[in-house]
Image (tube, rainbow, N blue to C red; front, side):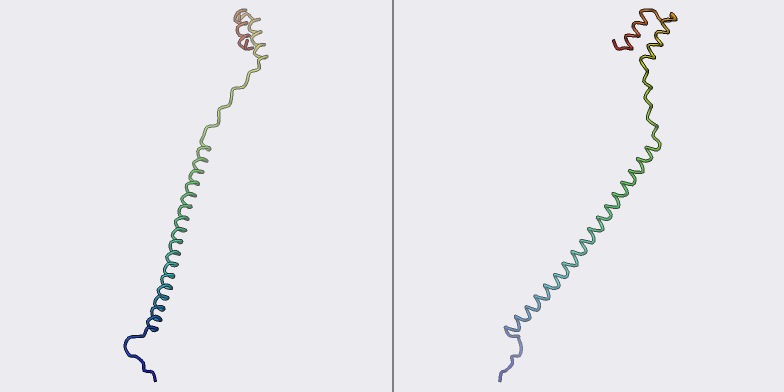
Length: 116
């Protein structure tokens, strides 16, 4: 008959106990790492959502300001109507015929109008 030792465990028992402790430690640390990674990811997602909200608010404010500026901006100034050179020449001729322009003034105004 084999007698059983009382006291310290044998080599096989010690190896089995070490394997169980190491396996449990590995499982616990893996679980802790996954939980911490999940929390970190949740925090990053929350920060990204907050940042997106800030960007959206800034865009909305900018759009509102642009709309307000366009609403209160004065209309663009209308360009002066282009004068018809023939009408202007006709008017100069009438002034010359009435004696209001001298020959020299008429010639100078005609040259200026025609770009000579």
